[in-house]
Amino acid sequence: MSDAAIFRSVPQQAQLIDFKIKGLDVVFGKPVVGAVAPANDWVNYPKFSTITTTGLEDVEQWPGLNATTDMLQDDDLAMTLDYAVPDFHDEKVTLPIFDVSKPETQRYRALCEEYSSLFVNKPGHCDLVEHCIPVTDEVPIAERTRPLPHKWRAEISAQLEELERDGLIVRSTSPYKFPCVFVPKKNGKVRMCVDYRSLNKVAKVDSYPLPRPDDVQEHLSGASVFSILDLRSGYWQMKVRPSDRHRTAFCPGPGFPLFEWVRMPFGLSNAPASFQRLMDLVLGRFNFVRIYLDDILIFSRSEQEHLHHLKLVFDALREAGLTLAGDKCSIGMDSVTYLGHRFSAQGMSPDRAKVDVIESWPTPRTATDLRSFLGLAGYYRHFIPHFSDRAKVLQQLQTTCSKDDVTVTDLWTEDHSVAFVDIKKALADLPFLDYPDFNRPFEMACDASHYAIGGVLEQDGRPLAFYSQTLTGSQLNWPVYEKEAYALLKCLDRFRHLHYGYKLRVTVYSDHRPLQWLKTATSTKLQRWLLALQQYQFDVVYIPGKQNTRADALSRVRQPQPVVNDKPTVVPRPVGVVTLHEAFSKDDILRAQKASPIIRQLYTRLLDAQPLRRNELAAMEFRPYRRVWKTLGIADGL
Image (cartoon, rainbow, N blue to C red; front, side):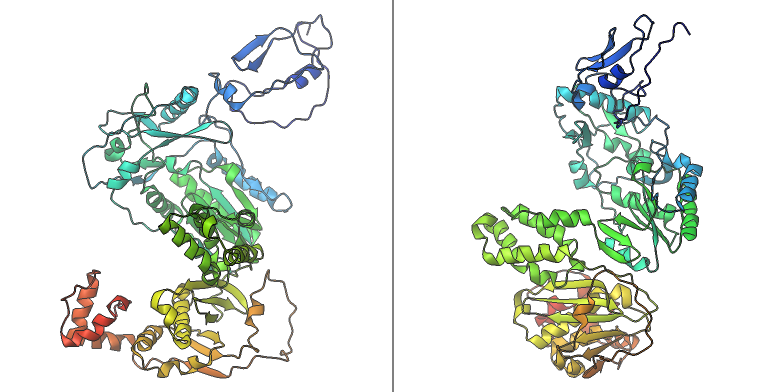
């Protein structure tokens, strides 16, 4: 041991930062190295290297205990050839995040370790679905290569080397060529993005549907345990059809060769549809899983059931050849954030981080600022009662500023300030939306104001969703009775996906007495609405405003309540009930329409979906339909 160095035993605590430096496992700062320097000056100790702004340098003299630190920027590290983009050849496994307070955590961890091959730090390879790029114009597109800043050339070269080594890209001789855009990241690195806008203009649209965020809510009744899985560079795990690869050719800048993608790149207009098709094929058979592109939500009623569900999902992913980003996965949680919403056993609520952004939003100064605010706030409109009514003055201001090319500041008034603050306050204390139970009846409350209509769907006084719509044009001149009837129709249509087809009737509460006589309406407009309403099973119950305490039921987090056998002492009693009975079935109406030559001709014309020309359908028998042509449509074959 005469050649060994004798080091001081000094405990040191430090937070290690991942710099992705090839060939080095750990890099210590000078204070740490100085603290553990050899105690005997005469011993032989190994040389060490230091990172400077010019690269790696061997240093003969060890630093002392009082050595000062050198501050290095991230781009200083990029100057050395040993600095690289994330290395997919690193087979290290990154396990998910667990709730350490739960006793089941060890079981979740053991399951993830059993499937550790899913959590390697490299994209998987799935060949079940190929991304196709059909185009309407076969003429190749070759755009001019854009200059690349010299500062980024070393890093871009390293990225291309990694992509080529992993089989994600290959050298190309394609007649297509698209330029790249380089976006600096917060950590000082740069992201390379291929500009496929010209290709997207001639690409045929893939209409494969993407799920809506509110589709998740209706599947989570009774769920109490949740997990979130995120694929590692999900698009790169899917193949591009070999015959279409030449259309993805790109050149990062002057002096670089031409490459094309073997795996699906970001930026293609049909990429989301192709990837959703793949994920539905792999996991679509599980009714305890919701999928939006590479974000996977798993939900269960108990911990034991959740372990079983996770195993089934892991088996399916492993069989498909997909891998997960462990650092973005959360396993066995009481609540998770998914698609901008927070899901828990209590219900669905907005993502608190996004609500904080809205609450701290400064007063808009331009139409773009106002549009961004309304867009983010509107994403949570199904949480806010009468959102359209609240936001009407702001929407009008945004439209005016966009058309007249004036700033928001020039037209901002006290009314706009009140509406702006009102929306922010409404978002600050939003209710939890419950999960629907399809074994219990639904209740609905709807209302109309001068400018808007709105409603809420509930079960046992707990809100499931809100709806609102701004009235425009001639709708503003409708009498109150028609606005209330329109609110009833639109709310039933909006919540159709939840209540339609079930034997349990929807109870609609209203403080507008004339709705009791809705079935006796004689106007053409209301007769059309009554025909549309016959597909729904509902009862309209009139309750005077003073007795209508339902607004108090739009409350907050559900709290467990003791079981009380006694009936409540005060119960709102309905003053009147209107129930729509089907005088004719849908089949009866369909047969009658097919027997009418006038209706058959109108039906054929509506299928064209083209505006009615001036001299078209000019005969006397068609004139009543010409006057309401814009309101006609075909629904369920009628």
